[in-house]
Length: 254
Image (cartoon, rainbow, N blue to C red):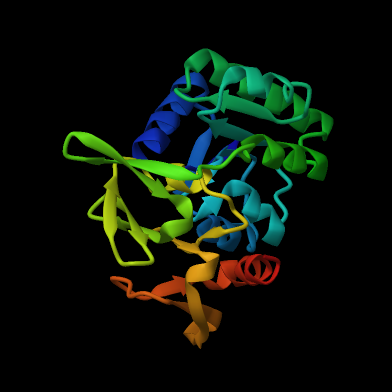
């Protein structure tokens, strides 16, 4: 049986690969992907994957975006850090979910379930399941302010003031419309999950951009887009070809 791991964190992927080999040595991990874009490209071509272990938050957006572009017919095990009580409602579906940190017992049960589903021919991912899971991972409330440590105080920073967020030497920085920059000790994907997706877009691995900060959009080679903001950015913001459609839908539906 061939497996594919789609996981944003390298250490988590390595740990999962080790556990798979210990639980079921007959499973061969054919590769590890980190992004939506890589996953779309992979499943756009013929493959021999029997099981996919898929993290929900990837480097360039939620894993559910993959299914907007390609069909994955093999069974999928979602891996997530979300609370167990929220996942219980989905245990009746033909897909399993491993709560991080993943342990051998849960992994073994998931693999056994997937083998049973595969033998019954019922291991495909249903659209209903995708939609339900999308609802699960969307926060019901989004931040209106961030609290920024400044010396011995916490300074409230309104979300409305944020033009973009980017990664600077592994630190996330919030940049305001008046070009003030503030460091936040959180991964970019965590910050993105706390922002209203109608107002903010995860452009790529380095940038989250505010809708009202966009000044113009240019066509770029290889069917990509270049997004310019109303304030300077340390580097060009490029939307990959795989995400152009999603970006256009987001920008025009605000």
